[in-house]
Image (cartoon, rainbow, N blue to C red; front, side, top):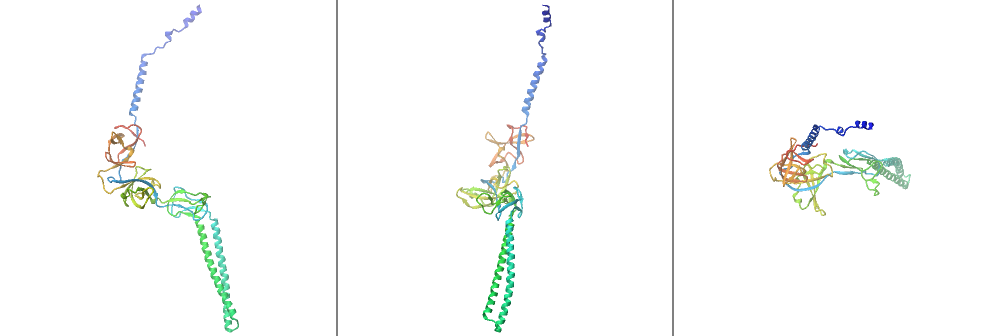
Length: 400
């Protein structure tokens, strides 16, 4: 009983075990929560969305009406797949795609062993015929001396007419054989020149200066000027393009061909560079129509030479008229920079890090570009892409 009382004395009362929290602790917790909420709201409210901008450009041919729009491709006037003139095996190809070559540069080297053997044979034939000429020339000289003796003997009445005739016949025969041998020498020399040409043809050279756009053969493959039909023989070594001869080729519906004339001003836009306006002019209208497509082919000369223009690129062209439809300056912007809100066209202009909503008037739409006749000046920065909803006066950051 006594031990129980001692144990009860050692037990901690329930009210002593309860921790009493002081009131100021709860105040601190509530204040920290409110501050965190306010900072989060202010951060979300004042965070700057990103935007991408472009510079508004003065429109090429501004003020001139577009009489026709068309699409086509960039094509070179000089394009050639260089092939070998002889059938042989490729030993070496010295060009790669994108390499520039000059006229006469070596593109490939072919196996010339067979051609060299034919050349050696032809040269030997020349020597054989030349030796035959020397033999015939010696025999002819002897026959002429014999004929001279027979003529003197005949005059003296010592020999017969038959002996004299035989001497004359031999001289004439040897002279004919000599002429034949000389002709054989000329033939053999011509065969030598042909064999030398065959050896030279084993060096494939560039016919004009240009860019290699295709490498069509590899070392070890057979090449031939004609197709073998089995797919194991190549007919070309490489394809060259004269980049200075690039032009635009479009098919115009024959119903609108009357609007096109040689020398007409054209504005071209490459699909790869929709913001770049290329000045051009109509070079020629091909005087024939395609009855299947009811179109007429038009060739357009580019007004600039630029490395960005590549063969077979897609291009859109606008044929411009002669007169002017108004005198107001125009600017060109990408179509994606234009916003249509409540039936009104507008753009967002970036000025000193903030957006300014600007109402504009659209004059003309060209492919991926829009011509504006008012509301925007050339050189101003317009938003073409954004990372959120845009508002007038919003502070933004420009994404590079």
